[in-house]
Amino acid sequence: MSVTVPDQRAGRTTTAPPEEVIDFGGLMIRYDERVLRPRPWTSAQSRWAADLWAARGGRALELCTGAGHIGLLAAHLTGRPLVAVDVDPVACAWARHNAAVAGLDRVEVREGDMREAVAAGEQFTVVIADPPWVLHDEVDRFPEDPLLAIDGGTDGLDLARMCTAVMSRHLAPGGTGVLQLGDRDQVEELSAGLDDLAVVETRVHPRGVLVRLDRR
Image (cartoon, rainbow, N blue to C red; front, side):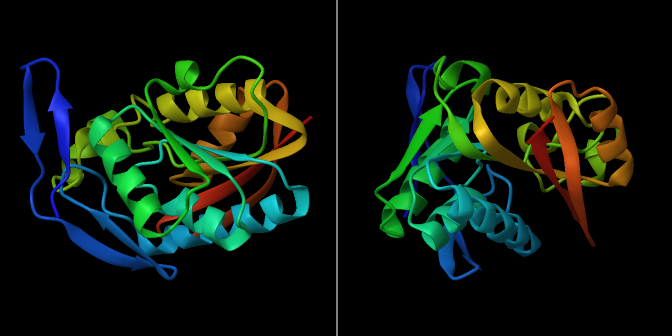
């Protein structure tokens, strides 16, 4: 298939390049070169989030969803409702398509700035986030990856800080977040600037780290 999305600036539509597909923890996830290729190791984030989610119930929120794979696998494993957010219309189109193909009708994909796409007063028991975390000066090391999906700013934490701010506003009492970053140094730097969230566990993987955040 090809995913077509509106190009509002040009008044035209954009037709996607040929699709690719990956088996992501048992879900067949489709995407193209305009979004970040799903990394198989990140299914560990899905499974960790699913374990926490199953114990808490309620809805989950996924930030920087991309093609949707991490949140969709967690929703598949729990059977619970998910709200997935991304600023990129192409990513949102793929996330909606992947949710539909997987039969996950309890998934709502919202396009827009994460700070505006979640309404005041909405609360979630789990927040999942895979923000761009590559340092701006190092993005040239990954020429095949879309810049929007990997550029985390000067220290790689611009979007991660935005994600934790959204977590602070929208985590329900007793809720928890599972965030992906690049390494332990980024975890320590991010943790130093947190007010009402605390890093309670870090799991190191060969190509990134996963961080659990709870309210203080």
